[in-house]
Every structure is written in structure tokens, then in C-alpha cells.
Length: 394
Image (cartoon, rainbow, N blue to C red; front, side, top):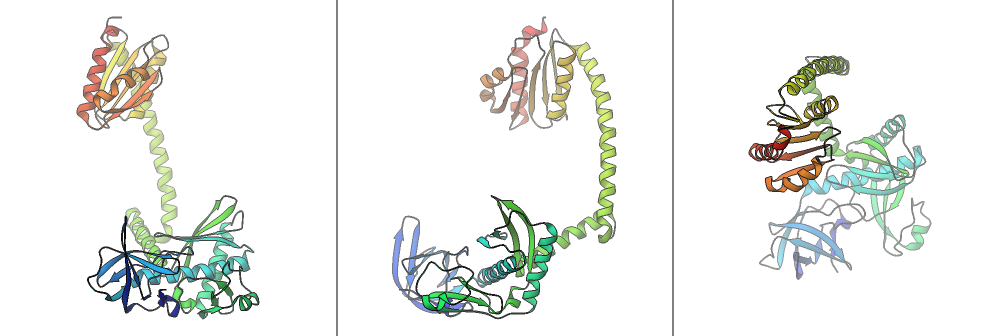
């Protein structure tokens, strides 16, 4: 059975050992070693990565007490040197210890038990037994948990028997009945856990609670610890600095400046809508005057699909016409008809679009399609115009 060095110390980064078994599976090569500090997937914590004789370790799993290390290729010798990706390991230690501390504070301050824990690449989450967590409580919880970090409480881990575990004030009774590993945060909690942890809460650095959201009747808290939290802060400061330069205002006044800018944009949009409505009214009259029979066709250089749709509706509301539009701006084609026409726009598109590598559809009264390039869009536009020739004679 593999000796698990990560239980002796979570701070072992390099060691030498011997390969005892090699397994060739469909998904790759796996190694079993006499000793390992590579932590496998488990308990909400991802596995460690690193190198075995400079060969990258791709995955680490536990099967029946053995730790299997998936590697890019098999080493040439049995005696090997191993090295952890320490940045990844310490990040996991910060977040797992941070989760224990956060869960303990949720229980104490919010009377909410932790139901699950997930440590992802971008953030960590816990689900707690609360239907909601208002922003003021979230901020209070963040202060409480960081207070415990600054007190630098000792974090220890040790194995106990089932009888010894029974007298400890554990957060939750473990499923295993022997060799029960306890992680203790001095003065805070006792928790049965097999993960890797820091030796004192000060090493967590800080915990930043990002947000809380409802999740299937409970509340999910998103958070980051340590270096991830620092990176989150630096990213936020970069964004804040860019906004400050963009609006030429002090960081403290950015929200007021954005509110003013938002009001200015709404005013400009209202003025633009009025101009577009006036322009559409003129364009409707011009297109109706220039139509051939009951067909109106036009290719626009820069009109987006939404504007073409609005214009087509205005035309078909005002007269019993068929409208064919194309936009060179976004490679879109639109077909619409009035109430009296028997043309089925959606069916026509469905029948012919594939021949021009277009995607789209619609109802009998209005259909639209998009194309990968302008050549295909215009080819379909001209084909449709040719197909609608009879309507030019009406």
C-alpha cells in the first residue's frame, strides 16, 4: 500500500521513492509508488500535479488504498525523484483551510450548516443550509472569518480511533470507523477531513466572499482565499484605474460619473430613436413609391437586422407588399409579407437556405437568415429576388 506522505506533512515538496507498479490503460499510463506526497482527488479538493523524474503528472486518483499517478510517459528507471507543483498545492491548502474556517463561522454567526464544498479553478464555493443570505450578513461574515485569520490560530491534524472521535465535538460524524483523521482549528472546530491544510490560519492570507446566491432552497457562497483573493483585488484595482482614466475622474467619484454618463447615454438614445423613426418614415414612403408591383427589395450597406425588421413591419402594415432586404453589415437577409399575400416566408427559407449555407427561419409572415460571408448572403438575396419576379408584375 502506498505510504501517504501528505499525511505526515502537507509541506513536503520533493522526495525520492521507487515505482512498484505500472499500469497501461486505455486513457494512459499510471504509476504506483512506495511513497507519495501527491494528493488524489477527494473531499471536494482537486488532486496535486507535478513531476516524476521531470515527467509531468496529469492526474492522481486513489483506488483501494493505492495512489495512482497518471503520467505523460513511463519513466525509464524504478528509482525516481518527485516534485510537487507547489503553487497549486499551497493554493489548495489555503482554500481547504479557508473553507473549514468559513464553514465554522457560518455555523456560529449565521446558524447555517455547510452542506457541500467545491474547489474549482476560478473560485471555491460552499452551500449552506440557509434559504438566503442578505448582503449585510455576507459582509459581517467576511469580517468574522478574516478576524480569525488575523488571530493566526493553530491548525493541526491527527488520527484518532472511533472511540476517541465519539468524544470530540465534531462538526459531523465521519463515515469511516478507523484511522479517522481530525483537522483541528484551535478554539474553533474539530472536523473529520482527509485534505491538505495550512499549519495556522494566518497562512490563509485572507478570505474574500464574492457573492451569495440561492441554490435549490439553500445558499451558495462564492469565495477566494490567499493569493487568489489578492489576484482578485489587483484585477479589480486595474479595472478601477482604467475607468478612472477613461472618465477622467478620481476613483472615489467614478460611480457618480458613471451615473451621469448613463443619463447622457439615455438622452442620446432617445434622440437617436426619434431621428431613426423620422428617417424610417421617409424611407417607407420612398420604398413604396419606388416599388415594382407588390415587391419591395433593397440591399443596405450598414443596417442591422433589428432595424430591417422594424422597417419591414412598417411597410407591411402600411401596404399589402412583399419585402426583401439584405444587409452587407452582418450578412443577413430578411423576407416579409403583408396580410393578403399567400407567400410562406419561413417555408421558402427552409426549402432553399441550405443551398447557400445559410441558417435561419421564421413564420409565414416574416423570416430571416444569416450567412458566413457576404457572397453567400448576396447570392441568396439575388436568388430570392429572382424567385419573386412574378410579384413585380402585380
